[in-house]
Image (cartoon, rainbow, N blue to C red; front, side, top):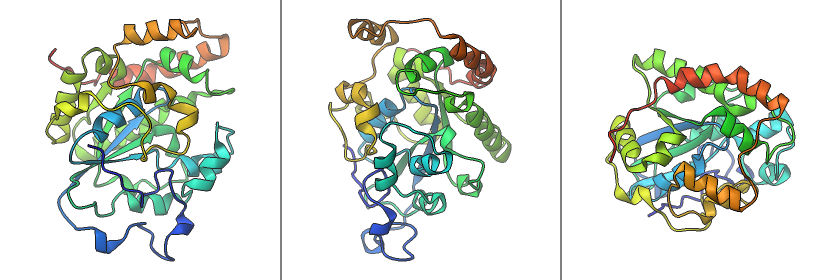
Length: 289
């Protein structure tokens, strides 16, 4: 079951749709204060992050939000991403207002708020105090595989576009503040044994694993960002996690076989590889299911 919460800025409405001063963007009469768990999942692009959002969105106690800072990121950087103008028109681009919604009371019956974040969307001009009160986790993917996939979507790629520099910054900040290592998972491990990895991840996050996280209905979601039509075609066809070899077979049939990195991408891969290795060393080790 996926809870739909259209009053949060998940690519569905603009901040101007809300009453003046209503910075949290929710109707207080429809909400109730209760203990809850807010998960900030920090990922880079093309990391199976939307499939993981599908997984959490299929729980019976969870609300998901899709890349809430994307519009702010595009406005500040001026980058020409697919659907840029649509994103800016449909999503709040004030990071402070958006950050408040991530701490707002949740709908009745919702106890887990899963926030899918792109790490590179956390720009230097954004404060970091709002990170407090969230349970942080990190989703990695081998940078060579990430770059091959990202190259199909963006014309120009920089090291910071992988999200790895920002993931390390957030990881180190959370580790220092909490005095413990936050959970890290690798997309390859997740695809290889979803049940085992999700079970240990849920345990680390303090929530119960639900078997419904392994499969979900095909198609789009109302909680998907407005940019879904440019980025989510593969996940919309999915109904669960696909093992790496299965994904590669599908890509070959679609004419997207594994290719060597171009010289510029290979240079980026060498730059960010140590960051990936640093985080990968802390990846959760799951008992095979």
